[in-house]
Image (tube, rainbow, N blue to C red; front, side):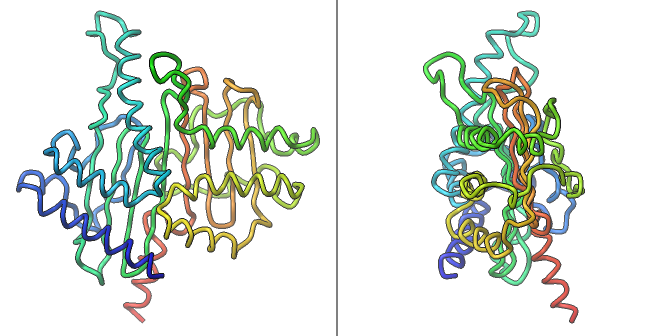
Amino acid sequence: MQQYNTLIKKLSTKVLEILNSLNENQLEKIKFPFEDNERYIWYYTPHPQNGLLIFDMKPYQRKLSYDLLELSYSSNGYKTAKAIINLESILGDYEAAHSDSSEGGSGQWVRSTERYWLAIFGLPNSENKPRGFRIGGHHIGLTVNVLGNDFSMHPLFFGANPAKVIDGPDKGFRALAPEEDQARKLINSLSTEKQAKAIITQNAHSDILTANYRTFDPSNFDQGLKFTEMTDTQRKGLIDLINIYVKRFNLPFANSYQKKIMSIGFENTKFSWAGSTEISQGHYYTIKHDSFLIEYDNVQNDANHIHSVLRDFDSDYGEDILRNHYLSSHS
């Protein structure tokens, strides 16, 4: 609990430090009331977002923003996030080299490692009121909500394009290799009979089905192979895959979240797969637990473009801590 409280204090201090560094024009762009509907809006595509663009910050303000990003993730999660952001330069060079010269030698979108937005909701030093922030841009979706000692980081999105760098000095690099490799290892470990249950369709979806929707119906993800139908080795493989996603979170929150899902157990958990089980072929999978959904897709750009997300049925956007707060304040 001490680590947890220390983390929340560090996050609040860093957000306040960022706000104190900004001028009036920047503050107008970055600040939103916590109750604003803007808090539920996020994009993992290159779509422009509300908030303050990293590009429009001064160098020391950018550093503070990356400090906030680093505090939010685990050390490995932050390393992955930075790798995903750095892929923008690689993607930009690729699109410039392969696009029609009549379009000015560039793709449809501006590709930049500084094309990410920070939005701050509520007052960071108001301990008894909800507060939070969002950092987002192409393939990064981070939503943090805090109330007292309660904390939420859902939805949590990582993507990668290219999933595997195909040329240049970084050729072969894969930002989200564990998410793909561990899942393929699991699906290929299943017997023919169990694969028939796990593989729900031979055609993978073109994107994650939950997209960036505020809500979704968990019952749409009830297909697949149950945890209880797996061998001990396969069960361990599935839990290892889940932990890849959970360990994106900073250590105190990851530990707390692991304890939560372990206490619930995995009896009703289902693993589903769609598409090919072969490398470099389009594929998609889900893991549905009693409390969360993991969704992963790699179909676009000749199966070299990953979208992956962890959504919590109760904690997305901090809805559970807000509900408990409002119930206790009116009791």
